[in-house]
Length: 227
Image (cartoon, rainbow, N blue to C red; front, side, top):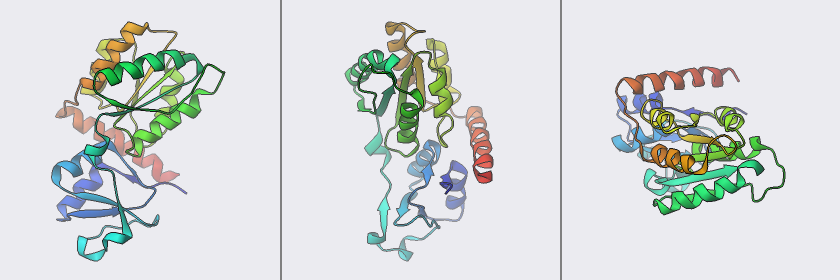
């Protein structure tokens, strides 16, 4: 069954109707931009107790029939980390570094250097971000490329593979990326630390870039509708 995708455009539509609350399917994916816009506008997003989604006014549903979505405050500064065997050691270093910068972390594996498949862990990181469990995600494999491809298959995720500080800053300012992938065999540890710091601390510039990110979401929604 195709999981519903809740985007910024749908939040904007709900606000235009004067709604203060919308109900979405229990298994719906709420994109980061949708969550941010709802938070800024005071629109409450709640998950239904089933997978049947509809827009409702607060007076139409009782509090025991819905499960509130985690607020931005609850997931703020939570970073999900993952790696395959090739990225395991670098993951440990970067996870500790992120914590030293004041971020809370979630480790989604792998837990050692035994050979494993990077798609499993890249998917876990991307899913954590798309579902709202984490604010941002970081995935490390040998080159960073495969994990980036995997993460970008998950609706609501905009992943970037970075090898230098310029790309890290641009990926946040212009593209509002929410998953970072790194290659342990491509980029040195100290450079990776600087990339991570810049990527975590750079905010989306909005403006003309906002319109372009919305077009990315429209394309994503178009293909999701065909599934």
